[in-house]
Length: 225
Image 1 (cartoon, rainbow, N blue to C red):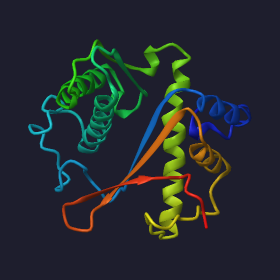
Image 2: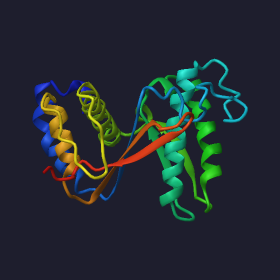
Image 3: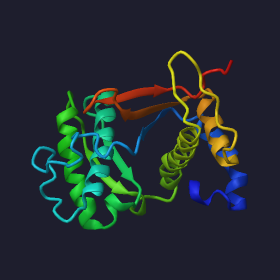
Image 4: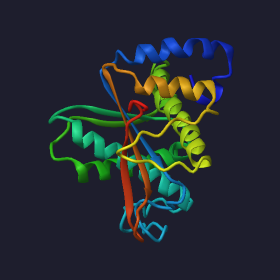
């Protein structure tokens, strides 16, 4: 199951049951949508200081790849530290994308992840392991598919809002664009449904003042007037 392959008839027919089954799972799905105007969410200059952010060993990484890797690593570490208990074992499984394209890249990223996680933790965990979906049992692909489906839908949703120049407000719900694809609408409707699986969405935008960042909690279940 992947967002880009949902035009396949078998995947399209299976999508509703797949999403319905996920609602029964106890857990959290956390999505972070970052405005492309933000070259970096770590340094206002847009240039990552390798010494400050602990990526000195990533000498062959391009700046956008380092930025992406740091976003993923810090987000994962932040939320793990927020929900993990003392002695709990943690296994992070990532898709086989640009920040884990080969063994060398994966080892670079894993080293940064463990160092960053130590900075966020207030308790001592059990074992901490990192792997990619290629090294995992086939059923793990179903879980790795979840952020892929949501991420694809969120990109299409916010791109459509941007085309309409919509302004979001905490007081007034924003109607969804009418030109969304069927797969985007299906996944957004699922995100708004009740279930055991908690779904959280955060939007990162440039702040109202220079060198500031604005973070908003998005509620897709808000009723429309």
